[in-house]
Image 1 (cartoon, rainbow, N blue to C red):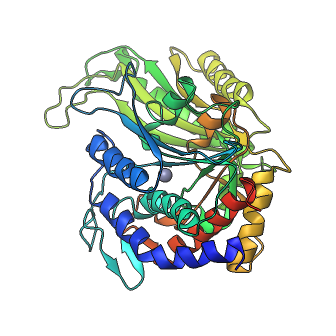
Image 2 (cartoon, rainbow, N blue to C red; image 1 turned 135 degrees about the vertical axis):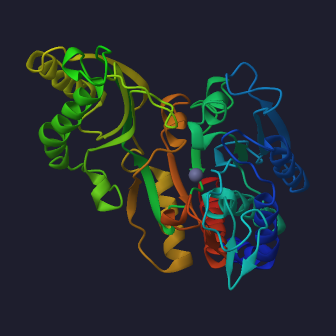
Amino acid sequence: MHDRDRVLREVDAIADEAVAFAAELIRIPTVNPPGDAYEDCARAIGERLRRDGFDVEYLVAEGSAEHTRLHPRVNVVGTRDGTARAPVLHINGHFDVVPPGAGWTVEPFAGVVRDGRLYGRGSCDMKAGIAAGLAAAEAIRRAGVSLPGTIEISGTVDEESGGFAGVAWLARQGRVAAWRTDYVIIPEPLGVDRICIGHRGVYWFEVILRGRIAHGSMPFLGVSAIEHMGVLLEALRNELMPTLADRVTRMPVVPPGAARATLNVNAVLGGQANDAVQSPCVADRCRAVFDRRFLIEEGFDQAKGEVVDLLERLAQRVPDLQYELNDMMVVHPVQTPEGSPLVASLRRSIAEVLGREAPLVASPGTYDQKHFARIAGVEHCVAYGPGVLELAHQPDEWCSVDDLVNSTKVIALTALDLLGAT
Ligand SMILES: [Zn+2]
């Protein structure tokens, strides 16, 4: 029997184990913030990797601001060397999950399997993906296939809050780097039959408007920062947003609405914070936080420049309008290069397993690809994994068992292909 067929047969044989392992990970409530139970989850992944023939390292993000005694940031990396130790395929999954929120009809951390679906917070985003990566490597081993290339599998922290103590930290330490890491697959829930090649850029900024306090019965004696925020929000809506909506990227961002440049008002806080007791005052401060998603064609300088221009225009037009603009976070867009052998191999594997031509997509939000690309310099990186993106962060999050099994097959065949199986 051909290697590929033997490996596919082994995936079917260990499917139940893979689902059980994903459920085991869901039962470790790695909620972020604040970053609960990270060490337990890293150990669970590490022990499974060791059982499956990997050398295991625990990499604690010492020195990062997020790493505290109460909430240690523990990452885990497993390595299974091939006979030639090259090339290296790195499969990375974040094991932090967002808080469950309200509205669940199943227990969010029980790891329940019902009607072919694995339920729980983190099921699709992305503990099923981690389980798929491990199962793919284990199926290759059980099929007795010896690969020239090396498989690495990592479980990392904090993706949901930026990944700075996770993939970004590993990249800064040189644990993932262009010289040692050839390909990266991140099994985020982008869908079992499509390949995600990157994301738009992010510019989070705050605008603080300052007015002058006065008695609320004589507002004409003061300057209301809230009134001025109203002017700013209206100017953004009338002057900037229509321009943004006209810009469409050539990257295949899904859903289509996210292929445009967008701006979201994330928060507005003005006047007195305490909503129980108020005293009559003109608000002398109003702060708003904005989330601008910019296109690869726009770039950061343009995105920020437009905000500065608009604020300057308002400051000239509106008497006493004083603003302060602060950058909070900047993530540059990333895109896997055209003609990447990783993308070509995944496409062949998806066609073989699912009988479908896989479209390329780009993610509406960012994920750890930015750190692999921008810090580690690994350009052949994609997101490909089980689960439906729209279910991520929702109540009753689930991942289909069939998706988990099929994506395991796709990842296993891709590993055979890239790592030089004969
Ligand atoms: Zn995720």
